[in-house]
Amino acid sequence: MEIPAPRRTRIQQEKRELILEAALEVFSTNGFRGSTIDQIAEAAGMSKPNLLYYFRRKEDIHETLMQRLLDTWLAPLRELDDIGDPLTELRSYIRRKLEMARDFPRESRLFANEILQGAPRIMPMLEGELRTLVDEKAAVIKGWMRAGKIAPTDPWHLIFSIWATTQHYADFDVQVRAVLGPDRGGDGRFEDAARFLEQLFIDGLKPKS
Amino acid sequence: MEIPAPRRTRIQQEKRELILEAALEVFSTNGFRGSTIDQIAEAAGMSKPNLLYYFRRKEDIHETLMQRLLDTWLAPLRELDDIGDPLTELRSYIRRKLEMARDFPRESRLFANEILQGAPRIMPMLEGELRTLVDEKAAVIKGWMRAGKIAPTDPWHLIFSIWATTQHYADFDVQVRAVLGPDRGGDGRFEDAARFLEQLFIDGLKPKS
DNA sequence: CTAACGTTTGTCCAACCGGTCAAAAATTTG
DNA sequence: CAAATTTTTGACCGGTTGGACAAACGTTAG
Image (cartoon, rainbow over all chains, first blue to last red; front, top):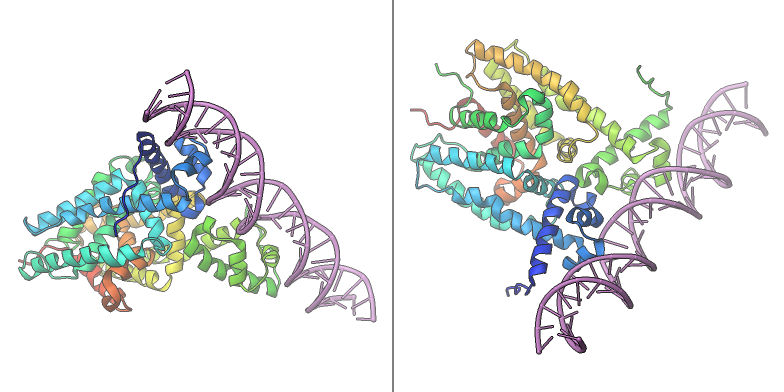
């Protein structure tokens, strides 16, 4: 029961892409209800009825955006497997997630907006696809713990803490920059964050005695 | 140039309180633009014009809510000082922040919503009061590092990571519960989180050799 | 009691917003 | 070229929303 991909002309492909790009910008800064079709249309350089010719409802745009988002968003976690050294593997997962926060902050905020409001549109995905993937990776991590490669702890909360710390630099960007001030809040903040997070996750705060 | 607190009757005090409580509920789940005065009025058990008698504009409600929020929200950080053992002090800061995420999730989400949208209404506070406070506490932490009481690292990013990991359990609650599932996602999740975070921040993930 | 003051409500309005529609303009096809 | 098809637009509509307003109602002080 797969919905057949609608046949589309070259113009339709391009215009739909243009609209999605504009909608990402608008939705991620104003939220779904805070955004208007007019805003998206203007950002995409077309009239409202014209936009509605490509996406018949506002929700359709959001839904399409959401579906694409989740694939790329979970890619770093999918890559996590136990073919390498566990600590190295986790380190590079953290690095990849932080890079995504740096390079795709709009996507991160779009996702955060959706979750904050109770995930009305993607709840099935969270309980299904996401949960399965996390359980799978938690099992891998548990294996590392049993083998004594990393300290035994809760794999699920470990994953949460990686999500939280990395996405923080996208979702709370304005706060981070405000607190760091003009001097330290520049482009270097992501490298500082990377250094800090690596140390935190590997060694914690206890001083080496 | 302090604005004098308006003289208010008993009824005004009570009704304003009622409205703010209702508005916290509505704003924190729908965002500012996603919430209507009617919704707040209904949640407060009064008519819309009646509500507008106590707060003349929708923004006034949000602003009042925001001002109160920030005081209580930063209280745990204010309590952090160097009269105790540094590691213990940080541990109890983390615990307090996690308790706030558990006990005041609506406040956390209200704040997150505001920051996500670029903090249009509280930016001066972030650059002023908040930044000053964080700088002050960062200095305390730096002192601990110089004294060899905790491992040397970036105090600002340390504070960010504590905020991120603890608030995650309020802001991303639906995701946390969806991923943990009905069994592990119950009331015990905050204790699991507390245990995990303590271990993470103190010892990190490297196994004890 | 009654005048003054505080509170509540029904009604109304202008702006906004999501979405429709028919007709014009542009593009593709034969 | 001309017909068929796709794309674009201006005008419009019904519902919602923030907010104004005056009248009604309740309360309190003299």
